[in-house]
Length: 107
Length: 198
Image 1 (cartoon, each protein chain N blue to C red):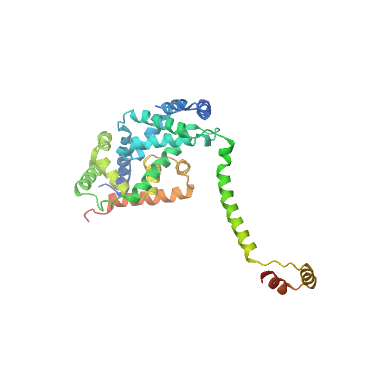
Image 2: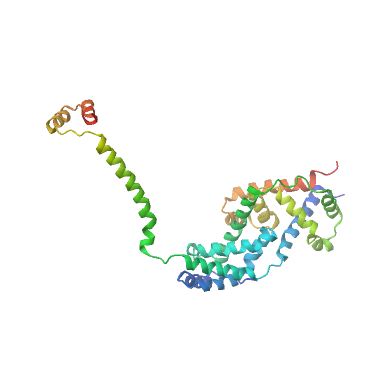
């Protein structure tokens, strides 16, 4: 009578053997030629290395960020009315009138 | 059989040539390591996918050649790419596969029971090469997740040290231990207990 442990050991050996038997699968050599062809194609299609190429992703990232920043600044400039009266502004700062300063800035 | 590359000295020279633009030198690396990589892929991938996956392994290696840490062994670096390529294949396959067969067929179960009860040591090697053995193995592995499948193959079926399996898969040692234990228990339960007449 086989014990569970014996069966478990045998099962392991069976599965191990079947697993390693996979290595006997015959594969023809065509894949080497295909792989080399794909690699040559890849190498040829890649652009040559250049400093400009290195900075390109950063450029587009900063270009987009710069565009957004410019739009925000333009919106602020168009919508806020800046105080032209320098005396009033100095007075408010001197008196530390934060609320009035904010109101003067926004309206 | 592929030659060992020592501390990667000669491989380093070839890699350098490839990185300097001599693409054809990559053929030397392929020639040198193809048997080794092929053995890994054959063990971890279905037969009809072997050619496709081995191409993928070498293409990935070519594309990330600049990232090879030259102090390490090239073969070890390549084995990581091969194992992870197979793992990626199974992850994709499991996402799109149909529901696996819920139970082992009666014919297979009967064959397995007979083999486990009677097979002598002398016939064991032949038995493991039988179609039934392969089909039972495929069925059992199909019941596991992609991660459990890979870890079970590496640790339980190939006898790789846990640390090596962790390196190949990019996991922690603890994760490999836990997964290997659970996957082994599941396989044993599937093949030794469930479905047997009580």
